[in-house]
Image (cartoon, rainbow, N blue to C red; front, side, top):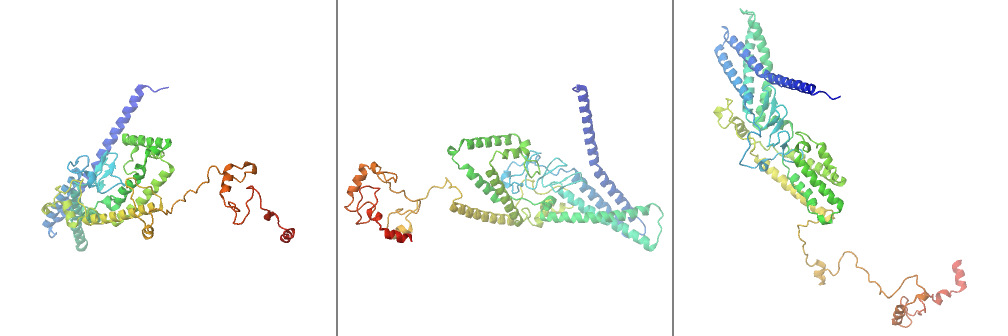
Length: 507
């Protein structure tokens, strides 16, 4: 029995309401870190000001001004980092340079990085965030305390937020800890009952936060001076490999330079199947292309690989594994491609104007699509490319010398001159060829030398040949041997051995 349309619409409406309620709850929960950070810092500065206003406190005015200043800069940097878009390749697309020529990082397969979910190219240092559901330029990480990603345009504000939070925490700890020490040593009494509790809690909380945030701040300052992100420090960066591109051309070379006229009917059907598979791959990007972060191919891609022969699949798999090994080895030798020196790295993040560094004003250098390369990296990368080219050339020569690879039809045949032996002996070129044996001379067609021939099958050709021989000499006998009348006759001297001789041989 089919359900009624009314019941189906009711369930759909209820499911839609549940999804809407879930999205609202998630949106409200994302504002919790903002409220928590603002409330915690406000309570901390209020308590710190109260301690600084105590009559027995030295340098109270300095502590108050420093605390309020750090509180303002801290919250300014925090909310700037929260509400500033980190940057996305879908928003700022360059129109002056081809990205294919400037990208030096590739995915695990050695191809240009492409995001299937966002349906766009991923420039260098760009990654897809599953929480934000989009690609982020120069993505560092997704910060839950900011409820957004830390990327290209808000990384400076994030660094300042960490720095001011560390300074503000240590200032609050210094003020509250000195008061607590004085209370323990001098045994003084405070008029208000609840105020000492806030002072003690502030000293504990600020000390813990100061220890944690200071280490995190130092780590990010170190990454800034090295021009690295958190993702790049935890994962291996795959640079564009010269062997991958040259090897792909060499792998396709044996398939491209084949004469289709000599293909069998089955091979022609296989080629047609490959073309149809390519059309479907381009027509259905959401099905056959790999997902973001997926190391292996999808089920559709695996089914497409089945159209290839087992030998071709094994060849490609071994070839890819060997290339992956070489790429990993080369990446370990190469330095960071984006490290320009600590001074230039700081200028790239904090801005060219040093006087604006303490303020969360977004003046970072770069658009997230084009990155200046390290000259040392370019030099070493060029050396590796030359070494790889020489290695491939030696390998190709070895294979051609061993007869493993087919001759390249693009290379014309070279006519060799006289060999050294021909030049020394003064003989005709290629007169003595060390190749396949020449065919033997066949007997005349009218001469039958079959062993099964009899006396009755003598032909005129045989008689003519025998007449041409000298007298007393047969065609296959030594000089002085009598010529027999028939080819099958046995000489008498061979049959006339005495009996005594035969008995001796028997003994």
